[in-house]
Amino acid sequence: MFYDLHVPWTAANGELRRTVAFLEELGYDVVALTHTYSGKLPADITCPIPREPFPTIKSIRFLRRANLILDDPSQNHRLASLSAAYDLLSVRPTTEKALLQACTTLDIDIISLDLSVRHPYHFKFKPLATAVARGVRFEICYAPSVVHSDAMMRRNLISNATQLIRATRGRGIIISSEAKNALGLRAPFDVINLATVWGLPQDKGREAVDREARAVALMAEMKRTSFRGVIAIIDGGETQAKKPNEAKTPQKRKAAVISTEPNNGTTETPPLSKRQQKKANRAKQEAAKASAAAASQTA
Image (cartoon, rainbow, N blue to C red; front, side, top):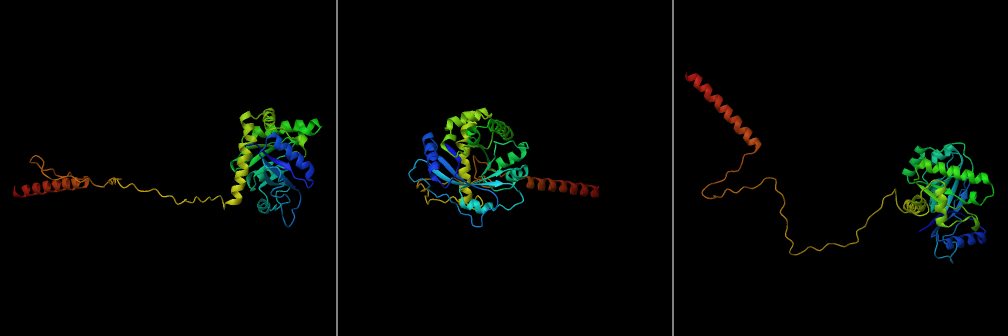
């Protein structure tokens, strides 16, 4: 299954419908429609994306995603309310402090970086590895740079994507389009070939549009449907029938029972334990001392 987890949602469904129809022709199975928030969030957070935005398109499963522009790390972003209203939650940090906060503390699913611009900081392995260990994935969006006529944006995309892949060791990477129209879309295998230009092997490129994206969707669903990651495994009621002729295996006893019945005219005595042997040796020593004392007195 192929995933595109970043298709911007617009109220004008004409262009979006053509984009989604072209995604269906390209062979994508799961598409996330993204609603972006910037600045102060509204008091009542509701998702404007319907559950089934295009009922006529049956072969694509639609997810609803919220993308928050993260500027100030000290601001209360009410991520719990956003997560409850959407299927996926992602942030786009614009500063190094915001990126560090997103990697270490924020309860999110995806960190979507704008790789078409030049960042004044470098991607460091430690915070990115912390985010990957927490189950957060890093997203590379190709459409804004591929479609735009500015060559600087394409150079920034290649440079930033290469640096991100090097900093994460190629782990926790997903690739999405962020295409506002059908011209910005690429087929899944074209995306895999594009990832090799950034330094991502073909197997990792395939995982970026398949397995890693699927893991993001499943983990987000588990967060919404389970309490603190607890999953209850319920027995279906099936019990194994006992076999009637099944013999019970004898249990191991602490001390072996030794037979004292006569065997060929002789009787077997049970061996002494270590404690009994010590008592017997001590009694022999005391008896020897007593006999020696008695002999010295008679002499």
